[in-house]
Length: 604
Image 1 (cartoon, one colour):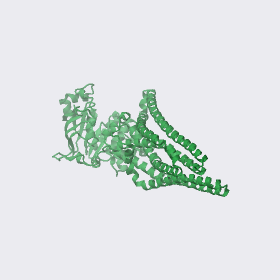
Image 2 (cartoon, one colour):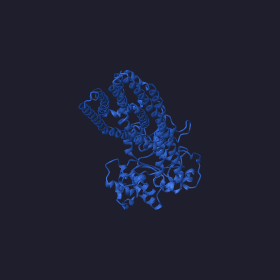
Image 3 (cartoon, helix red, strand yellow):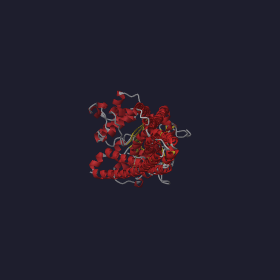
Image 4 (cartoon, helix red, strand yellow):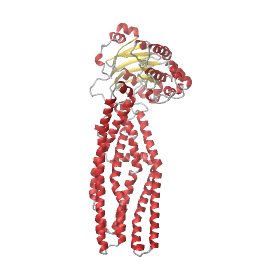
């Protein structure tokens, strides 16, 4: 579970305009630009067709109606019907053109986000709450699809429609046109102020959705803890507080939208009313034909929706800009390199697994804080098993995470058979090194798929059975569909010991040359542990292994033992040698509480 990231209090790293932000979507839009441009052109034509209707009305009023010609009126009605049908069909065609390509754009962006998340370093996932990442891959991308489907097109369409409509009105009567244009400046000022205020509130709301998603996810995954400790009321209270905060932010958005909507609707209505009064006076005085006034007012009324929708379209555009910003916050993070991190001199390292002057400090550690690991020197010979022992929090898990490069060393180097792991492509490195973590993670897949995930492809039923035998996971055959049984989310349908055995099977199924086991037997009972150890000895006979151990029974699997204390390797030897010659090691193996070096227990 990721730690919560206080995004709701964090300002964007760079203050950029909504337009500049939205332009970052162009690489995704480029492949479908032909259909989008065609759809936009069709929508413009449809809107312009709608503006022809007032001109037909003018012809009817000044012609057949004034001349009392029923045939002309029916002909005009036919023109109006055909124009209405053409407008409807063109808008329908526009929607059909954009539906499929925009679904493709959303799918591509979601796939890119997922691939990028897989390549980001562990340090990134330690900083970010999972709910924030989920909201970026779901809610934010939905907002972007809606923006590309509607506001993006209709900001252009409505702009062209308003421009053409204003030209038509000015041609009809320039004095009435100026009356209609009177609210233009107040409307522009209102839109500029609205965009800035709405942008801040929209960002806050979308971050709060991510926080709420995190709480829901943690509550679902931790439901056993919540029920076991009777914490459902406190969790519900925390959820209500976050939900109430989000509700308040959404209400602020609604108030801003209501305000701009009121201004945008009221000012044009007042202008139309003023134009009606002025136009009626001109008709009465004979300075303007009735048909011209009808056409003018019909054009003004046809422009009501393009004008009134400005606030709605700006709000959706601003939310899309915020969603784009949040999306690229993740995409701009530097991924793990598929190849070497940096070139280092090869040196004359021996075979096996070697740590040479390895120092490690977490990227988010306070400046000046002591490193978690300090100048580690350790050599595990080919085919040798080394147990790593130390007080809780001494950095054992961190040390094992450096071997598959889940974290990068701060200084020093690690070699496999003389090759610096920093110079190995990650795919090659992780095909050489298999890992079983203390906290086993299983995926929503079958038991067999979970185990064979460690084989890197090409493994079949025979390798699966061998790995299950090594891990003493015969319980799999008693499951409803055997190895084809679906494992529930996080493997919570299985016991802790069963999950740990499957994780161990996953580590050994690919017959790796190097094996890193982080306390792999901690959840097993005594009898199962003995059986697993007996089978594991056969695997370790042909593998170079580093094993984090807390119990003497696990230590005895190894040929030698390394004692980690104060971030450094302070002793190396056999189990018996360290028992006789190192008080701290003897103390750790005795199982007594409190030990030397306890001041280092807060190390990661």
